[in-house]
Amino acid sequence: MTEIQNGKKYDLENRTLKFALEVRSFVKRLPKTVAIIEDTKQLVRSSGSVGANYIEANESLSKKDFVMRIKISRKEAKESRYWLSLINVDGNDSIEKQRGLLTQESQELMNIFGAILKKFEAGV
Image 1 (tube, one colour):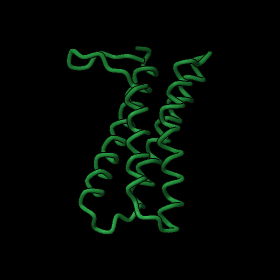
Image 2: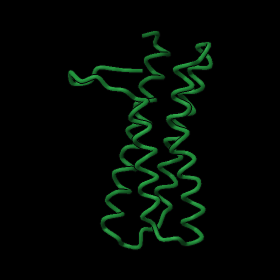
Image 3: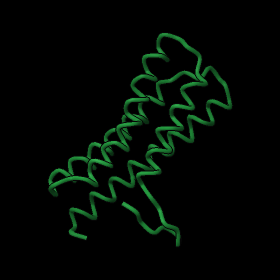
């Protein structure tokens, strides 16, 4: 779904892809402890699922399927935010800053998917 925002063409598929790629970049910078390895596995899965389900929504065959996929995208963005919060960065300011940006992006994606659902349910 391409939208116009502030006079610019905006592609949510690209934004969700960028989010998943940035998560992968973040994960590569983390220390390899047992807890971090397990948490990052979940984070990588959920961050990729945000965009994958959005693509599925755009290819949906019914309104019901579209709504379900958008809800799943929103849920996966929320789950990504959760896994990001669990990861211990041991006071590394650079990694903490990157985590903060990713947390903010996951929240923004949740808000966008919520707005899509509201518009869809309102019949817009």
